[in-house]
Image (tube, rainbow, N blue to C red):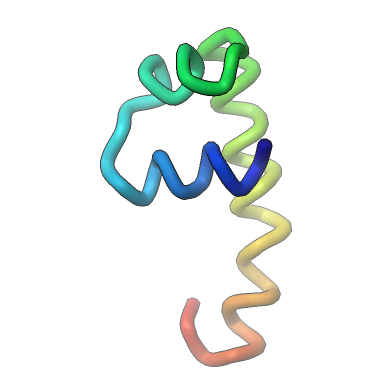
Length: 50
């Protein structure tokens, strides 16, 4: 679910739209995206992307 939310966000979708697509509330989606980005940041910095 993290991947789907991150991809939708990267495509420019708003949190409300993402929430509907993944079947969560907007608040839960915001939290999910925050956690997913926090986990992704060190991975991307390790390959020189972030």
